[in-house]
Length: 194
Image (cartoon, rainbow, N blue to C red):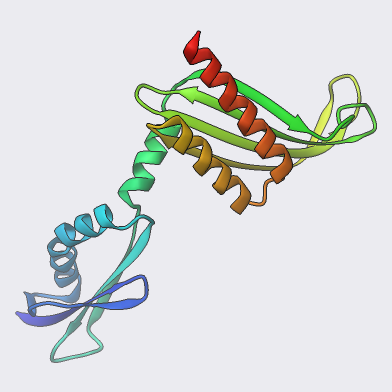
């Protein structure tokens, strides 16, 4: 049996090691090391708001060339929950498009921002989609660019506010997105009170 030192690096920063691992070879030591770090990784996943990488390296204490490593790309729980919520079917409550005046006239270029607010089982999903392109006539549009953000929250106001911040950060045309978000939110509030 050989003894292997374990090194754990999280997002490029040394994050510790542990007791030497006894194993027949580096591959076996790596499998043991990865398994021993599962609980730590799950704790980190719950605490980290974004994805992160964990690199686990095992090195033979008697022969430094006898080494193996594995890099694990870990999604945060928040990202997993958002991904799950994004794929859930929802009921569309409001859909508003703001854009360049006369952009959909044949021969012109269009620039639109569409906001959709959907009610999920217990959350609100807000999508902001920006598109650019040209109108060729007869409802023939050639899309050159698409940019989108999605945010899900149990609170409508939080969902709209955060989607707005994400849209601004993504470079989506602010004038159009602000108008469309405000109008869509007003439609949802109106629908809730009727």
